[in-house]
Length: 283
Length: 267
Image 1 (tube, rainbow over the protein chains, first blue to last red):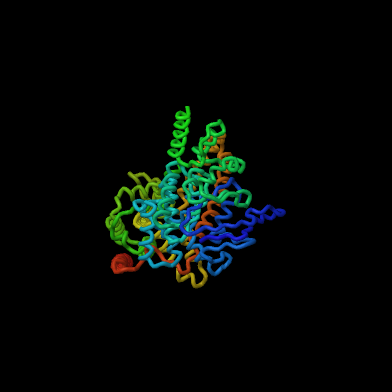
Image 2 (cartoon, chains in turn orange, green):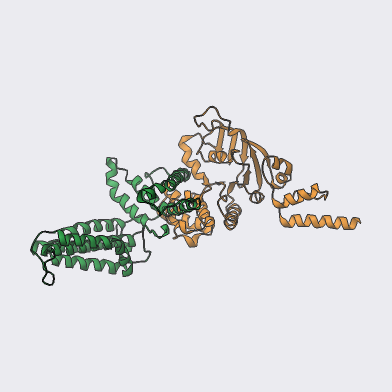
């Protein structure tokens, strides 16, 4: 679905040669996969995201979307239709002053007949659970609601894939939960390919696959359980691990040996209980 | 303090005026302005006042909304009326037997101007109360479309207007935030001479502009990501259509306007 081959990119800001932002990066994301991308600030996550819908074209190597090279300028709008983007600041990506008009923006641009636009808008708003607010002014909505409208705006294009660049970074915990719920729903119901760039480990833990980036490279690429069990490596990259993994890790370093490939509170509690029982029966 | 500013005061109800094509309403509005300034006799004014009441009635927007719309302009109306009253040459009009510099012609001009302004404001309120900002910009885009053949950017203009309207509340909120942040650091916006106060605005305006540019950049990327390529080949969720209702409405208004002109010619 999304493929990067030997991708190289660097920003030319007029100064002397700066370091590569993306360096010889290879990545293949399959259809229906939910991939989380982690990494500290400036590791090239957002730059990578912008390559997936042709906002940036590689300086070296190639990026393919459903087999189309993003360097192909004639097909750039087809690529953008297939890959919906959601950005960090909800205020800066909403175009219209009525929710439904904003969701209609992309289909309008694609030249779809009015009746079908209506249908797509209603469907998209229902998917993100914002149908009730279709006549509202976006600036009166909460952050999480605005971000859900932005997601509806992207899925109204009927994309194959949706790329989100830190969609929860500016939201409160409630808003974050709403957005995560929407993402999981999209994946489950529409089998949408999702690329989620995030700072939050608990969000990444819900993905099928986690990619950890550092300095324009992919350092780890595995299922969340395996990724987060590499606590020391993650910490050396300036990243956190989910709280439960952290707890298991700390218990281990204090001599209490339990597995720390745990991701949820219940899992962790079970593991600790197992340990307690084994100690008891051992006595 | 800045939250009170309202723009695009659309009143979302159902009425005959709401249903009209925005183009029809814009054209009627423009025609109405012309007629208001052309009318000369008391009778034609009476007809126009009647017409304005009719507008208020069929818009089904509460009268107090119109009065609210008139409030900010009240001082201007009073001010121009007083100026006209005293500064027009003509026959002296004694008040309670004393001559205080008011003329008969002045009184007539003052009343005429006051009525004209009130009618204008009510007509424009009727337009903005019954037409959503989106419909309004759509209407303007369609009306200016013929000009795009000679290179006039009608779509771009309409898009700019609707984005500007959309970002008004966002930027007001931002301004509020910046003012609070600067106040927290000891800035003062409402003390000192006018010059000092104007200078105090600089640390508020600079961050506001920088953030506005950043927002514009983000928005451009978001619009591109959603396949925005300009006006060509764009369809609309709600195509505006000139229907029979529009025809009936437009004809009715034209008859009234023709009546006003006829009255002026006859009297």
